[in-house]
Image (cartoon, rainbow, N blue to C red):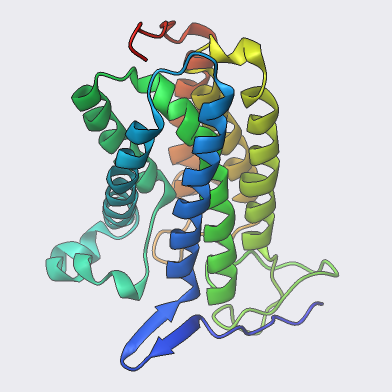
Length: 267
């Protein structure tokens, strides 16, 4: 057994204002993700858009992820509760974000932005997919600090007793996900992102991210305690696993049958 560190979820207090580590994880993720996208953009000899486009997109991305993440949590995990009290949808300080919802929000924001700027949609999602593991890593670390979305009961030597998990020893599944969704996926995408042959395969990195995330999420969910208000949805499958299955199918299509586009002369 490894003792749970019991880190104060509030990172900073400025009078009545309380800044949580989980909120900071979003701020750090967006800043580092944006810097990383700028770095990757410079590696592409024939980019489809400019750094200014990328700078302008940052605000769109933040709105898409936050709004989509919140609405996804409401629709996928607690629809009946929020139907009874619709105003509580806006109580974001109480927690409740969904990766799959955030992904949907990001896709919607990207579609609208690409249409406005006449940018090929998959060219921007390729870049965003490479940066997404940064957000996944810090988000899972934020979950760990909060002591939430912990794992199932176990007797492994590194098990932990979480504040909200009763007297039982559990898998630190947040750390498993931080490693798999964050570090492993980041390295995999980076290895392919810096290859010159990948630049001409627009949509390939987006597909790789979707497939990679789906695989590691389905694997990690076997160690993660199902949400108490949902439990198992279909046999041994959780909501996270079911939502990941169509992601994998779309990802495979993008990798092997996706669109092929070429940069315009003004790019």
